[in-house]
Length: 171
Image: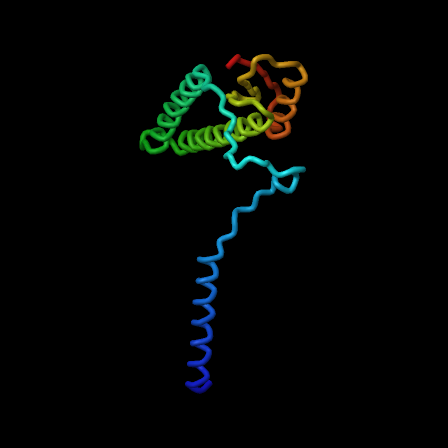
């Protein structure tokens, strides 16, 4: 390719890049709101929609902090056991496996809390111990059908749950 063609290609690519960058910077579309597709009519007021706020349930926060404190203490013990030279390789492997199980358990509990919150409960606390799952939800009253829907959602997301216990606390 001769130098003139290279120069023309370079200038073409440079100008396309400049045009594209100006287009991207100036033409920022509004974020896609899929809910608008399912609404029958557009809201007439221009006021911003206020999110629904629920009172903070201090008992849930306290229980969550207690569980986190116990787990962080266990996690610290396991980490020290893994790093210590006085334990055998089998003991370190067992400690590492338990640490992985604890991490998986934490993420599963967080996922289950999100699933339960999506069912319409403002706050929930999930604790997993072996094959038992204990669920606490913030609700004035919990009908058997509602408890069954929570149990179904938990067993659907976490098939290892042999027994699911659902309790409620008034917020």
